[in-house]
Image 1 (cartoon, rainbow, N blue to C red):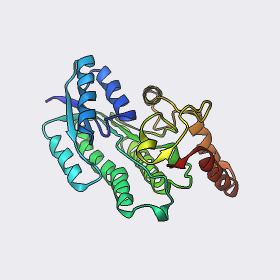
Image 2: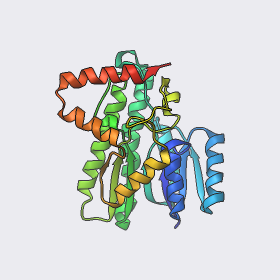
Image 3: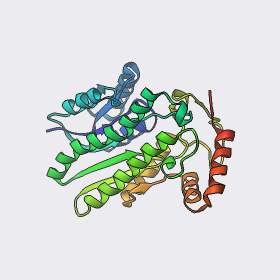
Image 4: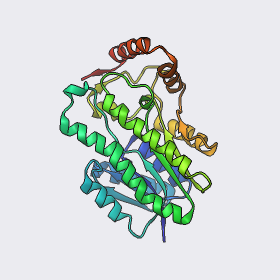
Length: 262
């Protein structure tokens, strides 16, 4: 039976970077996404460069039907690596967020992650071997105004991953939650946000490939909760140790100065 690395949301950004990383390590790939022309072009580029098998599954994982379609597509295929990357966010206050979009976000970044992981984990436990990487965010530890549901969903992912690590101790199944800060992807534009991607320094944007390389180095060291940049580590520490009234003011000021809705 052929074995694969399954990467959700693999059309671009971190998902695509993970697909390339695991293809470079000799894995066949299952890549999910919604933009047919783009993901098929990316898949062909990976096949040409790495001489691996790539299966593309066009699916919207923010729906029950989408999850069923994906899980049915995994029949007869051993998933040795799972990267739960698919996700999106909003830059609106909670009360102003479209309720249907809110439900989709919660479904995609909680239910879909849990259900896909649960399904794949069965085979991993039978083989006593596997890798599960869940993409969270530094926002899981430091919520800011305008992305409260996104941050809550990413906190779920980080907590789920940490709990899985404890349940799987003593096995050869390893898990990691990657919690990056600003990454140079199309995430912000796709979600109606304007940010200055030329910004330098600690709070500048990092390339997806650099984030993945750093996260995988930390994975090899056994790091379960990986914050792959200094800014994220600082923000987490501020949220945890700064007096809350001061942090709340800082978070509001940071959003107003650095992120605005188009």
